[in-house]
Image 1 (cartoon, helix red, strand yellow):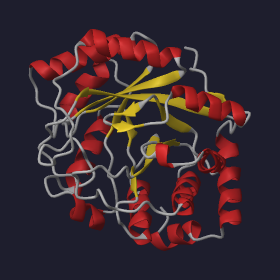
Image 2 (cartoon, one colour; image 1 turned 45 degrees about the vertical axis):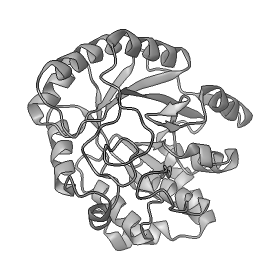
Image 3 (spheres, one colour; image 1 turned 135 degrees about the vertical axis):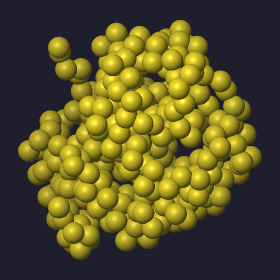
Image 4 (cartoon, rainbow, N blue to C red; image 1 turned 90 degrees about the vertical axis):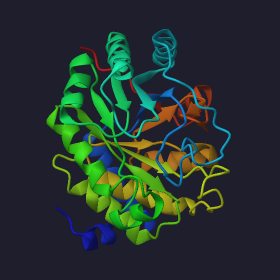
Amino acid sequence: MPSTAEIRAIHDLPIPDLLFRAAQVHRAHWNAQEIQFCTLDSIKTGACPEDCAYCPQAARYDTGVKPEPLKEKGRVLEGAREAKAGGSTRYCMGASWREVRDGEAFEQVLEIVTEVAKLGMEVCVTLGMLDAGQARRLKAAGATVYNHNIDSSREFYETIISTRKFDDRLATIRAVREAGLEVCSGGIVGMGEKPEDRIHFLHELTLMDPPPESIPINQLVPVAGTPLAGVEPPPPMEFIRMIATARILFPRSRIRLSAGRTAMSDEMQAMAFFAGANSLFTGAKLLTTPNPGESHDHRLLASLGMRVEAPIQA
């Protein structure tokens, strides 16, 4: 496992050297002309009891997000079919729960997972904390991936969330892995953290064995009413450094451009692809925050001479 000093040495390379190295690693393991499209759907919105300082769905913050109960199965399936038609091969479903609780709502989620899986898509869910038994039930229902981000370094995490410990997140990831699900775990850049926090965040991911199959790298979307509403975004090159360093450290993982793309120019996103990002969330919205939209993403790839990755044929 690389040390934090070794990760810092990669991260701090001159940009031409860093991007060249990341691009070499990327091309050794992936088709650099293809980008995987994923769609993220909020199947239960708002009224979350957590206090994550970045999140507009926290009940304690006045952000204008209207709480919505668990979506009816038919509406979820309609969204999944539209996503598939638009090129998405993974459908991700998020519920604003602190933790999974056995009962009627979880049974409904399991039923939804089964139906989405029948569409031939990768099924990812993010439902908060859960135990190994619940993870096994999700896998049996047809889920292939569970998302549970670690957000940042262990030290910085404690300054943005008090209702859940960093080790709670790691325990959930272990339960997911024990159940045989793939792990999707990443973090957020631009919450006011120092570069050292970003290094320690990446180091935490390297300690996972095996590493996450998917690593979403988000740029903070400041939302009025949250404690981080006034945080200035990092310079674009700091974000690109994270993409490139993640690609070098995790050559076989999906590196996903996630939240914050509406604040990124097409040129910045193109540089992220060159640096090793090979997946993105498409669609008009990511849970409750804006996203460039499917038509924009198709135009962007076309302008770059790239294409949407096709589903793997069974």
